[in-house]
Image (tube, rainbow, N blue to C red; front, side):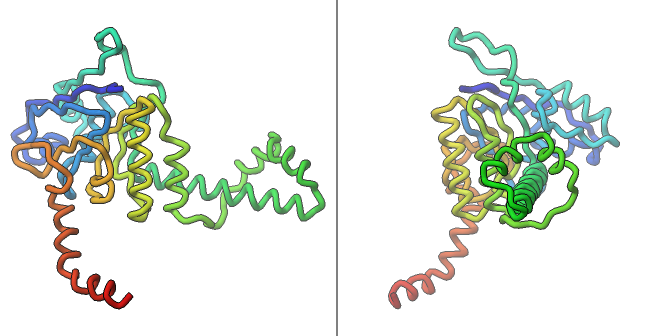
Length: 274
């Protein structure tokens, strides 16, 4: 399902090179982004991919949208007013009236914050139940206690806990619990804290949700593992003019290829020694 068909950036940018967000999109003024079930915004640092996600989320009034820089609020509002979007079509080919209620914009820092909350809640829950079991509480009583309001209240009142689970493990669990069928998700560098193998697992989950469960994703990333796994349309924000590209054409992916090719003889040597 396509919930957001397209987004058109303001074709007006201030002549002042310091005005935000105009200066970020000066080379893309008036560009139209047409979205698939999965669309990737690729670019290096400063390319504007994260800012673009936030502009889209603000224009659509999405949960998780972050207010644009307050010192440029008038210019930011003008940019938003001059930008536009088109929603997807229903089975009767009529434009849908709005986004699914659970749609949200998730920034990398939001993901890290949620990871920390999950880590703390898991450790606290386990510790409190162990404390009660050590005092003679049976397994059945412990399960009843865990479901009680008193237990939940105690969890909320404790402010500190030690870390137990890795960020990567918790991040995968967070995505498993958070990314649901039938929603539009804007994800900013979701590979944060994930190993390459877990980045691939996450990307495969996104492919599955988009293909079989009517979710749509717009993702900002420069991870070659995510780029190579997603079945996505890719916009290269580093290109002048803006253009789509295949994942293996992107500079960041080719950098990885060149790096490992440089040391290919070491890999070959290791294979021979096995």
